[in-house]
Length: 553
Ligand code: TEU
Ligand code: CA
Image (cartoon, rainbow, N blue to C red; front, side):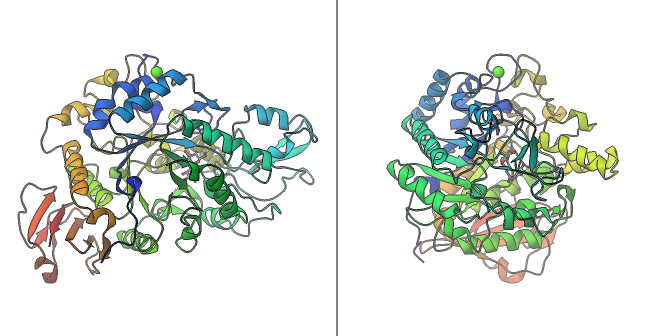
């Protein structure tokens, strides 16, 4: 079946996500920076990826890991200078690598001049750059909860009104109803695109159009509130279309929108050719193990649900639009700890998850460190967390009488600190990351999980990742082919075909610690194994624990 999808660089790309604070420190202050990334350009190139997505690098008080921007035109001083940014961009382009920057347009920092002006008086020219509403009887304007605990409204004594902040109170939501604000952001995007940036990751883009009646949410299921109240606002399509017409259409730029609350039913509305985004990050699988209380209310996940979520989304983008695939990023625990077995089958399950990531339809986004199997870190007290989401989560949990031991368990399972420990370059101490004291403790298991150990080991996760990326490049069926999942009663088996008019491949994944016998009708397809995470298939009729293999049929 010929693919209905037009070819494009970003459809065939493998994207490597770098969280600058934790990647490499180039000046010894213990904080990762642009200079450090420049030092590691050859390593990045050795991964054979095509693009780098940098988490925000703009001036920020760092209340939320840089997602609280106080100057959209300036580089975060801790990360370096604009000259170093230009040098990094040049270094990437020289290596045929593209750069995707992360723009946070749903909210700014409260230290941004716009907000400093807006809060001065009710008739300040910048008042309508944000959402201000009177409360009533000392109560906020409505019952909306913040992503980071507590109310989504903060009373500002200066003018006696509340301002909206879906995230931290230092991240006031911007009011896209105000044309001048939209113009400011169109100019901002042109500034960075004129510098030669190749892509934009648009933070929480699904929430930029607000339901300005601000009526209460009818549910206390947080993910439901995101879907019906924060995301998919009445003018969302219009604002995206306008940005496309005013800016993106004039550049050869890839746009990926972070879309919490966007569903398989409405996603294509935001991906219209020439009107919408190129793709979105969707979160079905990422919220699957979150209970009604959100991240710190973890519930068990099932491979059955995991498989059906991938099927629903792959079917959504079968003919139109385009998918993105990720199993981890700076907001979620490490994929091998969350979905794999980071103990007895740490290497096999890391490779299995990389196999899934790189054989699914849609553009794969690989989070730095997952190519070497970095794992969660075990913090011994909540105070060791450097993430406002965990700190606030603990504040809220205490109000409900949750013990620190109980909260710490949920935090160590689901918290974002897990993804933000310094990259493990060398097995001997922090030296690989910094010559100083790292801003965050490095995972003690760097003694066995590090680039220098894996670089020269032929069967390392790192070298498996490189081989898997290469396989995806050699077989366009893995990018553009149809996705044909195999129905199976066997609980921990995940089997699917990828097929186009030239080729058919079968991917077999065993998500368990047990040996699993393969159904007979599958065995007949096993002709040539092109890659696998076990040296040789011990038994032809079964998959070993956490075995992943890819066959051409
Ligand atoms: O995340 C927004 C978001 O919707 C969630 O996916 C994310 O898990 C968040 O931590 C709530 O649990 C984006 C950024 O990726 C995140 O780092 C920022 O904290 C957030 O927006 C606010 O800018
Ligand atoms: Ca530094």
